Length: 137
Image (cartoon, rainbow, N blue to C red):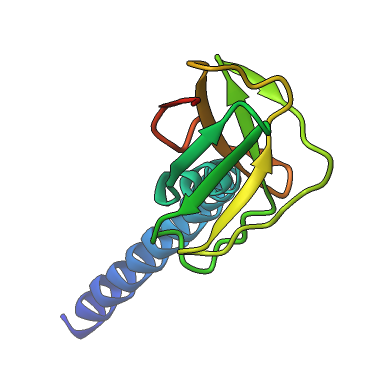
């Protein structure tokens, strides 16, 4: 009877070790695919926290004044893309903008009543529109 009890204990321990080994193998396979998916999503998640307010858009001097709202703490915004009527308008140099800061950006060819929007640029990631629309004066 004693040997039979020892055999059952050994069998139970072996089954537990096999289950643990199976869990480790499955976790390694799943961890790899989850990690690569998170790396693809991570830059886009940063875009969700960042928002801007267009203070003014003046057609006479082709200038757009933008304030970065709170949010996205620790996220560096390297530049803003200025969109006029949905099209990207380039400006001369990259102008980083910090949280709660207001800066001016040039928008070449800005006309009266043109719709102005901005989107953040963070490294190689260009966010979708991150401001409300504003009509140029």
